[in-house]
Image (cartoon, rainbow, N blue to C red; front, side, top):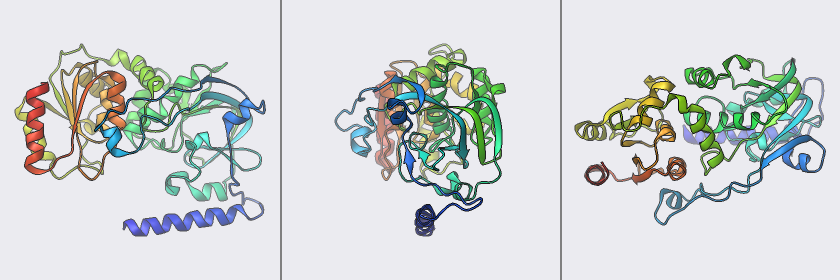
Length: 364
């Protein structure tokens, strides 16, 4: 199945490149390269403002998950944080890809990636054969983009919502375009932020916006991002519980793609140690924030549920459990930013049980 998907993906990319060399005809309007919004802003071809040029590099201690994963998640800087405004802007596809009059797409809207991550989420045909456009009057921005299609809790919180930090600097109030996804947590987070009524998720994949404010992603996905993390903690602080007032928690999200075979064994160890097992997929956002912010210790399986360590108070001990075949430091970087006492284990079998036992004795 994986090889078939890879072949299909490569085939679609070839079709995409071939279409870009063909002349436009009627509704046929393929993408024709890229443009950089921040470069246009610097050259005076777009109006806007650069809020931050560089967030500097985050920590990468020896033997950390950041070092071992080799994904350089403490870096990806400089990364300008900015906004620009364009008249009668066109947004196409499921991730509202901003394209100019020459049918080039904005690299920053795609997280500076020249190749799209999954053509399925970007709706290839919506770019080649755009449907009749829907016109939106007034001022709008979008928080949909590559990595931010609304179907993943981690990416929604850290990639989509943090763009609202940039929105706060706009010279006028702009309504917000969302991804097409209708996951329940999307509406709830927007209600917590008090902007749900200013947001819309059109089903159309070809939009013409009278006045479009492009609010840049605050950082590459899953990396060191103090601006975004600080904004999230401040914005959701009304949902925090009293520090240390709740039980220690073990975070899981059953039904996700990365649930390991040893999950029940690990849950039993933490349950025996007095941890409350939280299946975050069955909880509201408010319930997740309240439970984790009040917990004196946190553990969990690597996955979207670990996003909630954003709400933990400084010095809280945190253990992340990995399968040995997959290491990703996105949550370790959150822990570094929040001053948490982070540890990780990627053992299997009896070695994993022994590792968890040592952590419980030493940190809790």
